[in-house]
Length: 273
Image 1: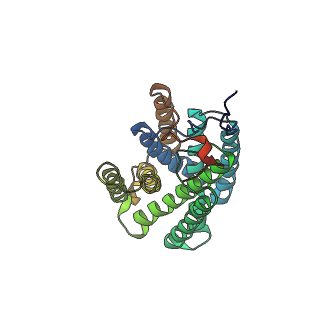
Image 2: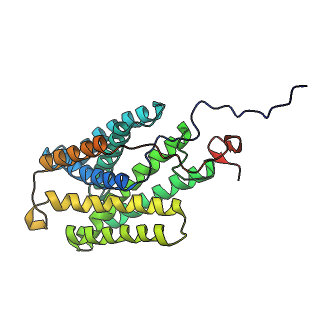
Image 3: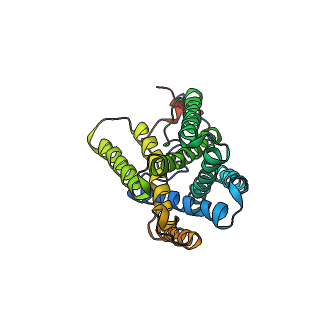
């Protein structure tokens, strides 16, 4: 007599792999470079070309939505597509934060508070809907939508925090970079030497690397009178973009496979645990 078989959980994608890269040192190096590029690239459009924050925000929002759609439609992890989407989110974050902080007149503290509330709302709805905010299972359109919404909010928040620290608090761009660099180092120490939630540490590091890149970017292109090096924004952006391309080509990246889970215990990305 034929032995009964256990029901197979239907799926149209690989539960072992996700469409985001493995969290390695290269990932974080590219993330910081992308955030710096987002600062210099956003300032190139809004300040150097003098197109303004509203126009710059509209341009980068269109690019971001297009790339997120392509990333969501992709069946597997594509490094160039993923990092292009990250750069689009960080340039949009730069111009959007400037629009909120300056054009709307609510200032850096108000802008940072508003953006923090937006990020917490996205993460809260993501957790309530899916059951987790880990990036190890970004494998469905729903989780990808939450992922990129949270990424964009964190990028925008990071820009506001960087400007607030450098300008309002008065630490300057170099001082701000040191503060956020030390904060990232503390998160790394917590990762290696404490049992703090890895999900919490990831989002903390992701948020903090944004103002780190923003302050470095401002330090590169702002006038000497404002504490910067007054480098050409378009040139700095081109160098940073070339560095990213070189890293992607020379250092192979693979999708983050995360800890193994039985697909029969998953429903629409929610663990049965």
